[in-house]
Length: 340
Ligand SMILES: [Zn+2]
Image 1 (cartoon, rainbow, N blue to C red):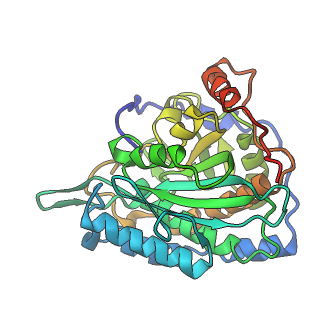
Image 2: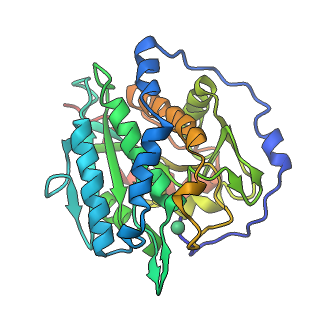
């Protein structure tokens, strides 16, 4: 999460309870899908994050040696999962620093030319003197979730119908540099959605405990929200619309360059504001890994629903705040699903 558009950290708790008054259809989860979801484990997430957020990586500033070590680690996990390399140099898409990109090729010949993106940023603030900003929650948590979800989804046979691009970005803390580069250098003929992950690990938000729930930025902007509500209902995670921050945070993470290019996108987080935000205290032992594994199962199922859906996700044109994104989408022209 970047600091530039930092909104007031004032939340209205009452919204927690009002926002979920509606009951949503629950996705039927097949045995194969359940087996896939069960592969996502708190222990595995803790293993990955204890490395990504270790002092050895010196806070993963863009660019830095620590960031490069993280990139190698993420690439190694994508390789282990069996993702196809989708960078210019193996899994690396190199701009000012490296995005790490792998693809799970879709199983439907008609839809596999269109992609759903799961993303997170793996950079953080580096170090100042002896203080290392490990960025365990921001956004080591999203980074290791991309790894864990990719590893689980890659075991599904057949693969989901659309292709799924798994990417971790550099330079988010400097103003979404990696995601801007990625959107300008697409790895897929048609990108239909970006689901971006931020700050999934801390349930001790500034606004009280956040267990069993997740926020989506631009809650009312796209149909991705309904899909995630469906996936959340099937996995025990409540998608929460924070009326104070949902829209203002939409422009503060890596989903935003996708939106500016007309691609439906959102950022999913457990809590935007937590006590160690952009402080040296953002360390991995403070993460709630059991809750994070639950949230990741909701994300994995939602991603699968997005990739299998006959219709690609769409903007909510009834919301005037989406007007610029809808215009950008129209400017892209061409069908959402390329003839192939
Ligand atoms: Zn941040």
